Length: 125
Image 1 (cartoon, rainbow, N blue to C red):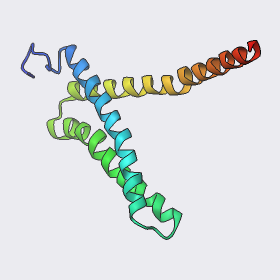
Image 2: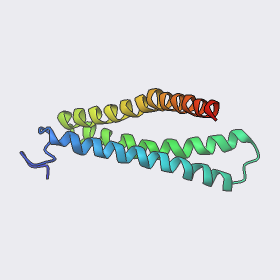
Image 3: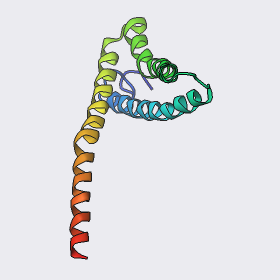
Image 4: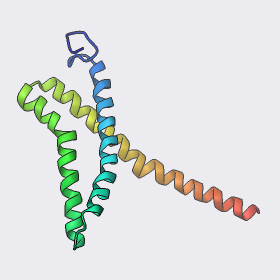
């Protein structure tokens, strides 16, 4: 699949699609693991809240580093394939930027409009 001209060829534009899919799946996995980290930290019976928070932080840091960043280090340092590294970094930043736009602009806008529509419906009743 990574041969020259194939779909995952690092020098071919279709590799960006695979990189974006990988970044989306990784983001979904990170969100799901956050729930697992909180659940397991609750089972650990910490005496202080800071120890509970530290446990969650350590679990999430290790998981997200290995899941989200380690393959970039592998591509950049071990394989030394800068074109593939650039493609993956572009995909990661594109997915993160889209996520930020949705969370910081689109969702508040929709929530505000939903609230305004709900208030208008209450006034009509």
